[in-house]
Image (cartoon, rainbow, N blue to C red; front, side):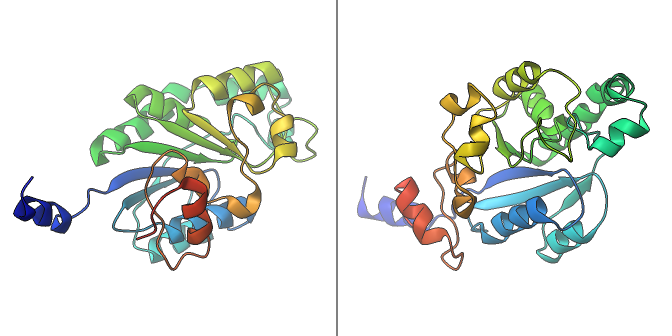
Length: 233
């Protein structure tokens, strides 16, 4: 390679990785705030972001203020809130509701993946499965960030046995990241297949799949560069 070729390659714009983030809720609570922090910190020269949300709300407004596109798509939680199960007259009734139209809901997201050239899907929290299925339909990697236990959780209600959830999560994910080691232990064998990431290191989860860098201004970037062995540009 000549010096001219090297200079041309160095000056060429870097190809961006297009990521589709799946938000389970449009509110701006703990999980959504963590996701927003991750999106805010990504280097725009390296990442192009799209976000899927089930509704409009404060989280969606915050993402739009960052000038990232938001796509509203129907999602029915496969790990529902207790009140949702009660409203459906029990687990069986809710399971029917969740399974009805699941394929169409997933195809709707898969169409977004194809239309926008998405290269990875990132699902935030365990509660929604449509993004993971859509990634499988499109044959692209899926990263699952899990922040909560399914069982022994006063707010959530599992509608199938734990082994079904764990098997599905493993089958539909290139990587699973837990917010703590104690949470990982709740998922049995999954904890031995994936490395748990403590909450303060949350944004590193996206970099554990892509060897790209966060913006220097992002407070976690120095730590992440050491963690990933990556260069912070």
